[in-house]
Length: 218
Image 1: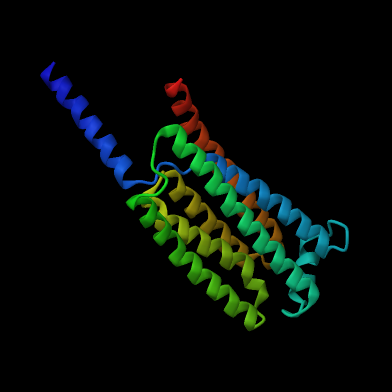
Image 2 (image 1 turned 60 degrees about the horizontal axis):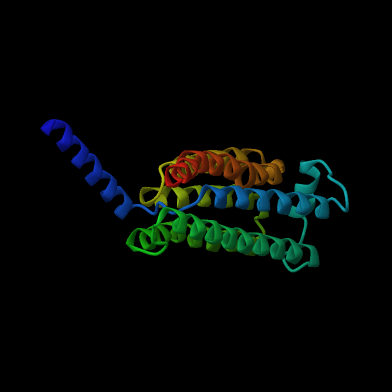
């Protein structure tokens, strides 16, 4: 019994240490919502650049690459991207806040701070790099660059949250590298990377961490 009690104490201590060092309030629903938003935004952009139809992705990419960075259509696409990012961040905060309440976790603590710092350093770096690419007219590298830097950001921040984020980051990087070889299919890779992968990994995280937690609380 003593050995069993010691093992139970060690398990409790390990659980407490993990809870204190990781941002565990991150909700899988935030990934699912971000993925749905990205798919809707991506499909609308595809339809918009295709003049009201879903033209072949290579044709859409070629048209996008021909745009001047100060043209009305390019500015419209940039605005769509900013709105998509804003909605994804707001939905992530909303579902994570709801999850923190359900699990009795603090939404802001040291682990959250380190998670955000490690997430945003590669993200901001990637954003600046993409602006430089746009300035030089190298638009064909935007799809792969955004996926790669986003994957690096997730990988960098994964040590402070659920381990599934690491696998999502590696998947985004791998997808970005493939996208750099298949230039004409950038919009497809965007839909897969920011849409489908978010929904898949969000669903995995929700079923693994939140469904069980809800049942335990009941």
